[in-house]
Image (cartoon, rainbow, N blue to C red; front, side, top):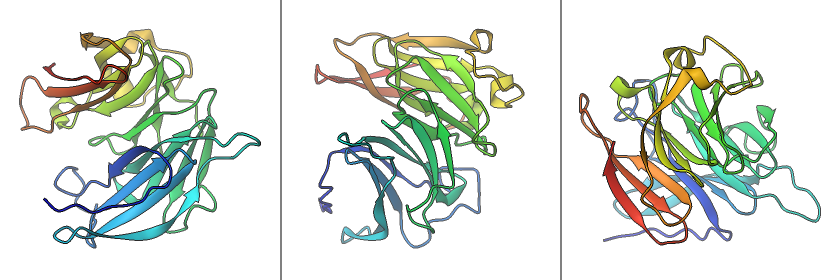
Length: 260
């Protein structure tokens, strides 16, 4: 097994590959020169790497790393998440301990964000919807809400869904037949699949207050002895009635595989 090595210098808090046409609906989405990888680290920086040769494992950095958080003294804020816009490989979203979601155009580097959305809490998770072009979910391990944005209007108040237990990680279902389903790792309240109402998917209402009548928990998984920390769907064939889920808890060194 061959492997490539990157000295991250600081702890890497998140990594995400830029998806290509095999996993998205958009034919114009391209990574023709090699896969792109975004990484957020404990120093408040985002790095973008291009995998130049999968066979040899050579990695070229295509964009200089840059601080994506406003740094305070004497504290240096941590960057918890870097996430791609699945429909434009030039755009990355970031969040961290400075309580701001920021958008970046990697063609311009990390000198100036294209927008800043100031939040009331630190952001630990962001994901672009793989089947609804303008939809983005953002959550925090420091409060109970997942916020749904129409990224065309990133400064508008989002729809807020109170999932309970601190939303450390969110993942939309990869299959279009289940585009309403959002997988959540709620640190203090286990793992759960949240089904969003059609009006949330369509962003027909915009309200900062939690909307309890526009979502429901369809299944939850509580077999853990520690904080619910990381979770993801298995990418599967369209039309499957249930999906395989992998979940990890923080301090008990446990990973579980379960079906929703």
